[in-house]
Length: 221
Image: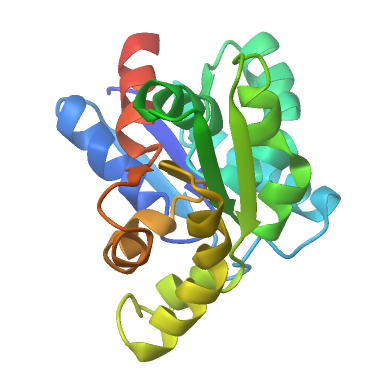
């Protein structure tokens, strides 16, 4: 029996990564575990996020996965180092994450060298994207936490006046700062590209980790 690739997320957002992986790797078996019971992760303490993430990985290990994709920015920021040491180094299971692929894609996309990052409170506070982009000379990075976005997506709300108002409040500072590229630093956020794109305007490139992460998964295999 073919060993599957395991995907984990705090909820349904990681399905955006899984969708791209299925396109690129149609012959692979895949298992997705979304922790909607304890979602959102982004407002929780780092140690709690780390514990929940490793619990999900332990569950997938029982399914004999051959690779792990942490399809969640918050979980990546909190638990990547632990996961790679425990499962890649010690157990030989490659661990793919979503932050580095999105950061690389944003550097390619930006024209004015000013990149914006939106994410959960935990992801923004971790400064994971700032570290990922720190080596790029002349690059300005502006960040904004958007904690309510995950709640809207988990509730199935991706359009409407309420989310438009919340999104405008979150995104206006980044638009006024002059970013020309915006990293959607949460795998839930691609489901809100309609409202985000309308507010930021057509001149701002939206970068998601989904396709880039699928590329990395393909290359690791």
